[in-house]
Length: 453
Image (tube, rainbow, N blue to C red; front, side):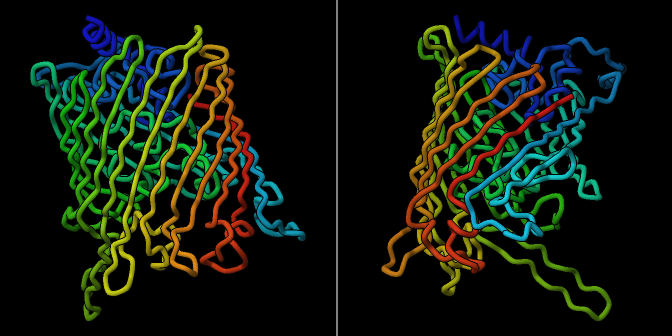
C-alpha cells in the first residue's frame, strides 16, 4: 500500500524537480510546485517524488496552461531557468608569492560568470519542459567566459506500458558521461545527484563522496539510452561514443553503459540498491573529413571498461531527516601496445596510470534543522591506478565535511572541506613542478552560494 501511495504522490507532486539541480525552476514553473516537493533535504538530492517525475521524462504538467490541439500539447510559455554561484576557494598547495597567477594556495574568489574553479562563479541557462504526453526536453547553456556554449541536452521519449514507462533518450553532454541519459540515485552515479553540488578545483569534493566519479565516469558522451522504469526501479542500457556536444562527430556507438537500480521501502526508509557497467570502445577524439587535397584523419578510439555498485537509505532519526549513501567502483587498466587506452581509469592522462583505479566511498547527511540546515561527512578509500617505484598501487584517501544552509528553497549556502592523504600525494605530478601535494594541495576549503531562479 505504501508503494502505491508513493507512486501516486510521485505522479502528482514530483514535478518540482529538474534532473540537474540547476534546472529546478524550469519544472517548478511548469508544474506550480515548490522545490521541496521533490528534493530530499536540499537540491540536488532526489526523494521518491523527484525520481518519479524524472523517470516520467519531465512530462507532468501542473498549474501552467497548455496550448492544445490535434496531436499537440505544449506549455503556453517557454520555461527557462538560471543557475548562478559565487564563492571562495583556498587550498594548501604551494602558493604563488608574487600573486600574479591564479593559485588556489593564495585563495581564489569566483563571482557569477567568472569562475574561480570548482563550481563557484558559475552562470548557466536551462531550457526545457513538457514536449508532449510522452516526451520532455532539457538543455544546459553555460554563460560567461566571453561566450555561451550548449553543454548538455536530452529528449526523453517514454511510453506507458502498464505500470512502467519504456522508451528511448537521445542525449549529448560535455561533462556528465553516459549516465546522463537517465539516473535517479543520490550516490553520484551521475555527478549531478550526490550530497555535494560543489565539485572542487580538481574534483576533490565530488571524488570524496562518489566512487563512480572518482574513477572518472563523467565526461563527454553522445548516444541513445534505452530505458524502462517503474516504482520498483530503473533499467538503462545506453549505446554511446565518448564525444560530447562540443566535439560531437558522426561515429558508431561502440561503448555500452548498463544500469540496474532497484527502489523499495524498508520500514519508513526510502531505499535503493544498484549496479553499473561500462564496456566496449568508442571514439574519444573526433577525426577530420577529407577536404580538397587534405586527407581524412581518423579519430582516436579508447576503451570504456569499468563497473560500480551503490546503495542509499533516506529517512529520519529522532525527527531529523538523514541519508546514508555508499558506492564502490573499479576501472581496470586496458593496455594496448604498452599504452593505457581506458579513459576512465587514466586520471592523469599520458598512459601513466597502469594499474586498476578503484574507490570505496561512504557518505551521510543529517538535517539538523529540517528543510533548513544540514551537516554531512564522507570518507574515501581509493587506489589511484598509479604505480610507485616498486609497482605498488598508490593509495588515495579522503575525509570530507560539509554544511549547508537554505536561505530560501532556491538559495543554498555550502561550506565544504576535504583532506586527502596516501602515497599518491607524495608522487611526482604528471606535469612536473613537484609532488601532487605541492601542485594540487591535499586540503581544500570552499564556501559557496548557489542561486536558482
